[in-house]
Image (cartoon, rainbow, N blue to C red):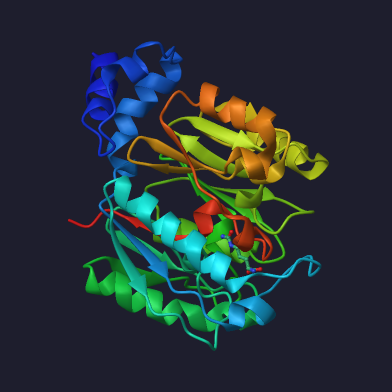
Length: 308
Ligand code: CIR
């Protein structure tokens, strides 16, 4: 019964994948029962993205400033990213760029959306706080209710949040703090909110994501291995963990039965092979090198929504 449900969804997916594509997959039974019970939480209809301001090139926040961003390439990569979102069946709403906010294209950081409820964040870096208003308006225009963090000392970036369907994992980082975790728990009392203290990376999602139902990918650096230990000991749900060599390979976007991953040219053949074989769902490589220069991961440029 579970197998049939999973196959049927995939077979009728927007990419027109065949049953054959899936028939050889061996899916762990725990993962499978989880997949069927939380499936609807990861079926999206819309995505919000945002244009790239010219100020992104010189003024976006960067941990390493040695590599120059090429705007024309970034524009091309964003166009391709949006095309892929559309191929996954999403209607894409692209908000205009705002020159005052060089990092405004990283819309994931401004809200956590689950079903028809959104929690607006309070980005940890002051230069990013003004980005949230446009996201609030866009969400409300789509009929999604927004709530704010109720503690003025809370700091939160969406890049620190992994929603697994079973719980909300929050990286306690330089951008997100314990007050935010506690406040987020009050906004989403229906899910446990679990705090994961991290260091040595920008966001939790810089090194770990939910790559499909019940499966978390994790990077290979030493700080990522610490994250893996904490996830294993603190997360309340049961997950299969896929370990990769490079941190950036671990940021996967799970959309309507597909996994957006980085291409072999950006993550190397070994991680690419692991992702394309072990995830056991269709994988779509998306070039993202220009955004990585400003610490952007694949997930950061879209907010995925279920619009009724
Ligand atoms: C920043 O430092 O805030 C941006 N340059 C990068 C944000 C990336 N956000 C994400 O991956 N969720």
